[in-house]
Image 1 (cartoon, rainbow, N blue to C red):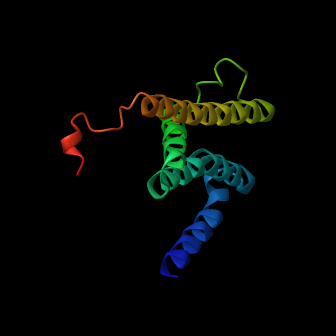
Image 2: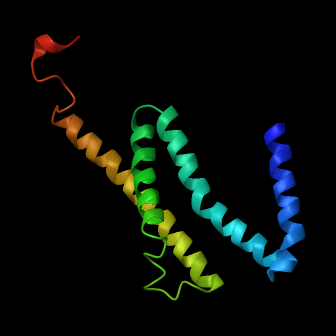
Image 3: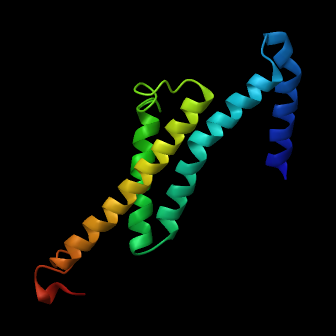
Length: 130
């Protein structure tokens, strides 16, 4: 409850001061939504990678790695090639980033299945199985 009160206070003060800084409230809300769109999937995938087990964990780890790489690269990997600085461009970039994350997740699952098929998940010495 305390954290919610702090966040509401910060948002109220920022909304009151934005006109004096020359920034409209709509622009500030758009920037906040774009920041949330970038980081919320990363947080969700990281949480799922921690709490899931088995193939779901592998899928989430692969998607998490792809999403983290896209954020660390500035998020402009696809925007440079597609005029991604318009609203339609941002939608296309978000769809391509989603497809990349899903593809990397499935590639991680396929890699895990391939390794398990070859027996790499088993101990090298049968006496080591604790």
